[in-house]
Every structure is written in structure tokens, then in C-alpha cells.
Image (cartoon, rainbow, N blue to C red; front, top):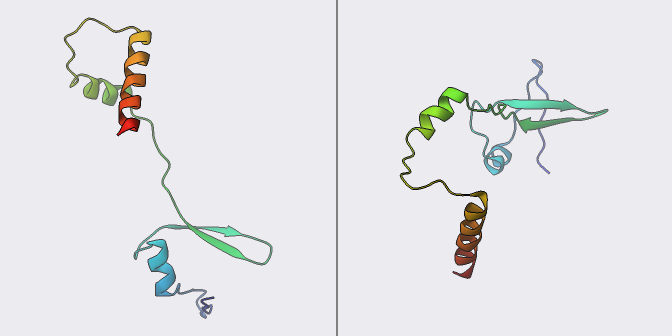
Length: 89
């Protein structure tokens, strides 16, 4: 098990094999989870945000569809057929 030491400034160096295995390059933001007699580090993942209605409208405006509207049953049937074709490959 890799080991490290706490410096006089309270810093800890994670050994390179550990950083490489976790794909943590320099500058990776980490969260610290404190246990009773331990700490756990994990990559800090920024919160996901939902697109604004303006962004959705802008993207939807790029989708051209000049056919009659489809019913939910039509869409469901076409998706089912598409999945079956993909899984048969």
C-alpha cells in the first residue's frame, strides 16, 4: 500500500502511481470527506445544470422535420424496431 507523510505545512503528496491510476492530473479539484480517524479524497464533480429554455429553443430550431406529426405509438414502435435491429447485429 502506498504511503505518504504530512508536511509541516499540512500538505500531503499523493504518489504518482496513485494519481495516474485515478487519472488525476495536476490541478484536479478534490473533495475531502472526514471520517472518525481518516480522510477520503475524491474528484470534485461540478454540478450539472439544466439547459435554459432559450438554449433548447435554439437547438430545436436547428432540427428540420417536414413530415406529418407522429403519434406516441408511432414513435414507440419505431424505437422498438430500431433497438431490435441494433441488438441483432
